[in-house]
Length: 356
Image (cartoon, rainbow, N blue to C red; front, side, top):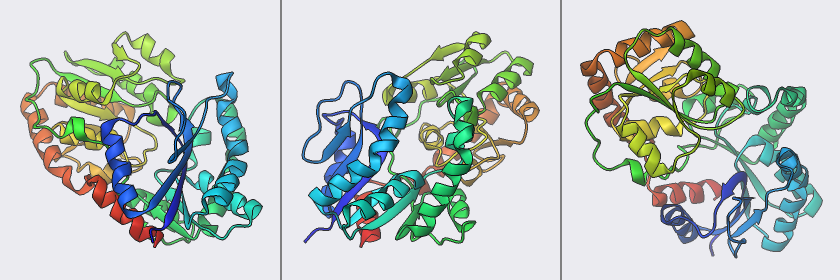
């Protein structure tokens, strides 16, 4: 008999699923009996037998708080109804809600806490400054959950180190599943014009302000393109560069093809999916020595690592002024993608082994 697994997280799903995302869940269903408790995209169809989706709350400013406050009750309801063998929680805070739900429902179930990044980032370097008032409590809740979870799964050497600092040994360490279908076709040659591309949320942890400072001081004939939205949009507007608030996966792949290099100057970074996307498209990376970035980017080989905004400006000058360097970094980046790739079937098998 297949084990029943409840996946819990804040991720937004849109039903019906895109074919590539559906492939992931088809692979999971072949290994385990799946149910997902998550958020609904605004234009999603209602949930189904697999997906229990929480609709957005208006006004938007209270949507996140409403989701977290009600999450333990919603998980408890699923524990009683679905009777899972395991709950896989997307973050340490989701795991804390699952631990409370287990007590509320009085249902024996094992809790797996996943760590995709530094849990301290969400209250210090994301959204409004009011979040910082929650930092101490949120840190304590995350540490408690990771120590009390039945198993912890990490996704990179960086996240493994974070967990070990708490005295916890991960039960498994493998990359997050990434839908990379639009990125895995043969890479395109560099375009004629030098362009640096940033893709990510426009939040403090991505160091958008530092990128703006570096770009203003960089002496280059190249261009900067930004893809993303968030609380630091005013910084991007002040730069006057090409800016797309949102692109599809196919659009991001085309944007990488139109660039010479990806730039990711984050103050904190978990798995760094966009790094793998850039690698697949044969584009090197200018990145900070933060989070998981040094786990993926080899300095001087697949990219250039920097420690300050000044170094970032100099790196942009170097790469955008030297086509041969950009090509060499891109070729090495393409080869560096392999360890971070996995098929839906490989991911599903690893999840099944973990919950077993």
